[in-house]
Amino acid sequence: MTPDAAIDISGEASRFRDDIGVLLALPDMPRAVRDFARRYVAHFEHRPLLNLVASDRGRVMMAWMALYFDALYDPAIAGSGLTVNRFKAACADTGLCSQGRASAMLGVMRFAKHVETVTEARRGHSLRLTPTDKLRAAFRERIANTLRSMSLVLPEGRLGLARLGDPVFEKAFIIGACQAYLGRERPMASCPLARMFADKKAGFLILFSLMLSTDDEGLPVDQPMTASIASLSKAFAVSRPQIKLLFRAAVEAGALRPSGDDGKRFYLSEAMRAECMLLMASFWVIAACGVRAGLAAVDDAQRPVHHAVL
Image (cartoon, rainbow, N blue to C red; front, side, top):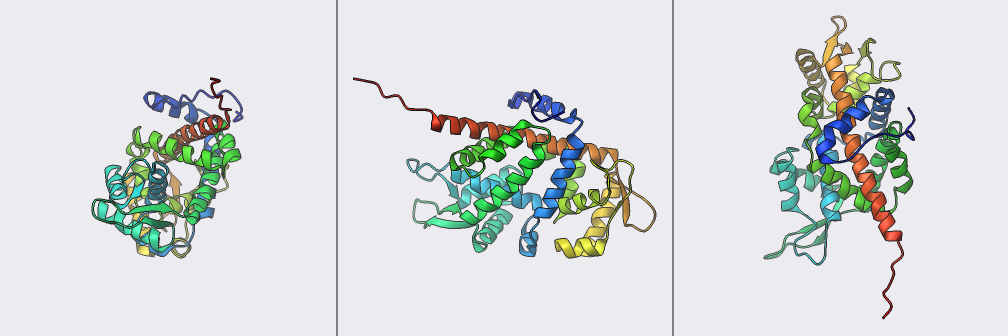
């Protein structure tokens, strides 16, 4: 099926599971998920300091939160925008991390010049921060990779790619995607095996590297995946004992099946394969909501204004 075919994705919160089912039924989904895994690993930047503070999933989601609250800034509303307290509360409320870890991550983001101070804190007023061009560029690159993979199954991927770089589109996209995420069941809630990797430092990078070790065009079904623990440790700044513990836990939970006794070869279990598909379908439905919101905002901005004649 081509992404230009009629695909019944409603985008409505009440039909979230139905929308996911539509995507899961598409024959190109395994290939699209593998394409995303390849782009995700290729995009990785070697940043051990960030790995000490949060998982790779946590870093991505916290960057989205920063962009989201900044996009909601309204100069007419006192205290709006990205503030330290609002950021910490959101990270805790969504289950990303504790308020203390969120505060530490925000400090790292400031040190890395991903966010900067707009106003100083004073009595009765919160410190307001804003994402820098550096963070916006990183966001744009990551979203572009996501939309490229998504375009293999959804036309919104291609339509969103064509509008990246338009500030009107990007602002509405961020708001639309984040509100779709916050207003629906959290994708990770239905994927306990995937969460095992997501909550570990470089966990998804390790899982995706395993998947990409085969020559399967989609997600590996009956091909053994190989892993050099030494190379994974070096590539992603995670200790070898941590990787071994992750593999052992994944085998015990049923996410991986060992192939041999060397601890370096595994099969992807059917349950893990299904969760990877479910997780990506969930996020792509959310991203499609963001694209639609962005396109609607661009249309509104381009619509001519008709002034009443007195």
